[in-house]
Length: 264
Ligand SMILES: [Zn+2]
Ligand SMILES: [Zn+2]
Image (cartoon, rainbow, N blue to C red; front, side, top):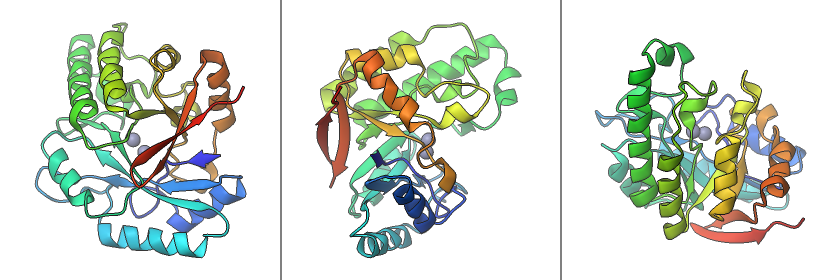
């Protein structure tokens, strides 16, 4: 089992990289990757959830790779923040580091956080919600098309609390899938939402079905911020492979995708 989308207290997680790794190993993970947020804010600073000292981040990872070499393969990742204003600058910085993969995630519309509080959405009313969701898709599409990334994170971030409006955004999603297909990007089935009041994956099932139809390689992510979350709902996510006929699992090394075919 692989686990690539994990956070630590070098970003916004609640355990050290080593604690996260040890938990992964104890839960039977053979390849563990850390992917703390990397974000340069509009004013050039790094916000609270981001890796603050990027050199230190990779030094810690290099050390872990050395110490745990006989137990688990340690992969170097980041979750790159898709802020249109600073995305290129962020990508430039990351070029200097020995990354295995970059996960691209959109957590903001302009400087407004999408996945903080449900009330911040519901207070807006349906028209404004729709406008912001469309803005989200616009930014997310641009990242899929041009971003220096390998894996697209949680496609419908705004559905953290379930659907906010009745509108159907499938056409926006399909446009993203088409460019992912063209560019050879992977995406994730993210289990983080299974623990909230919404018993669903990111993205929701109809979108997962389309991922399979377009044959986009996937990783199963737990988006763990705690050691107890490193393998949460992974087996439930795996059941979707058979249900939707997902054929290809992605692994990464030095920013190259290695494909494993699903065995049924
Ligand atoms: Zn994320
Ligand atoms: Zn994450």
